Amino acid sequence: LGGGCEVALASHYRVVAATGVQMGLPEVNVGVIPGAGGTQRLPRLVGLQNALDMICTGKPLGDMNKALTMGLIDAVCPPKTSIMDCAKAWAEWAELMPIPRVSHQNLKETPTQAYQVCRAASLKYPPVSKGGDCIQ
Image (cartoon, helix red, strand yellow):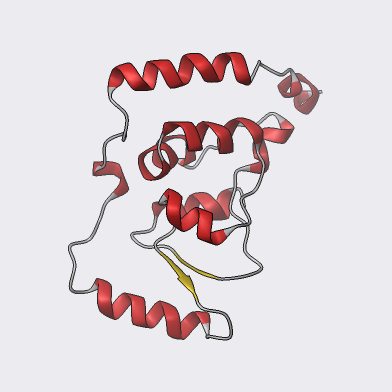
């Protein structure tokens, strides 16, 4: 969660355990925007609508199969399998592939679609004034 999620977003690949994992950006619940690249990397991985939902609500995502479908993670380690063994197997497989760079990916939406998604989000997620509470 939070900075840990943003570190994962900066990684080339994300392999997680099947249970006990949550990913999200809860810092928005105290009036702080994600500051380690989450606002830039997340939309490129999961699409603008999913990213806005995660960024604006701060709700953690605990369903790793949904995270896999969204593109937030690359693999879910099967239950009762060591996460280290799973990550090593993934690394051996990934070694054969070109290294993906999130920063080189474009948004999945066209500019017109992105505008429409942002416009709808501005109505769905009105501004909150928690930032002032955080400073005081």
